Image 1 (tube, rainbow, N blue to C red):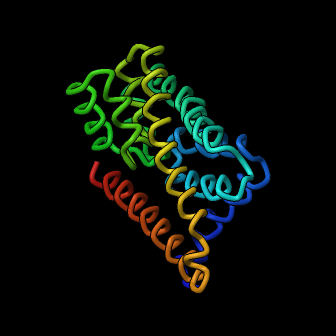
Image 2 (tube, rainbow, N blue to C red):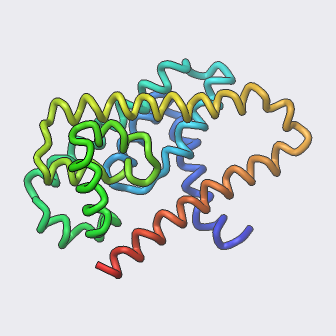
Length: 208
């Protein structure tokens, strides 16, 4: 097992064990963690939920709505952290959330360009979706609209990723001859994206 596997395979195992053990509530918990500025990738959470859907362990709509609801739950404390802490707090302590000044500037540009719709759009974008709540709080965005657009955007994202996992699960017999290798390939891709995410944010923090 490589050093990369040793570091990040436990993350994948944690995701799988949580959803397997807690069902839809596990999805809510994991997606709330992701939306609270902690880089736990939904690209790993929701496809596995879709795989369980293909096995009849949970419903397709239930898994997708659980993902969206978890995003809302995790976004609320993040929003209020930005709302009451303000930009100076985030600029000073954002490194603990892997959020740099550049991340805030990116979120500012999206919000200024698209208004409240930015919260809908950003919820369907990798990486950006993780930290958009803090800038929303800093900018004192309308809270009900923020929650509404967060839920709708997250629901679209959740349906998309759960569907991918569902289809992979439904056609797993096609990959039966090399399923183990295929599984590790998927894990490897997810781990690589996770490393890139963390690296870029640490790099931005050093440049800030």
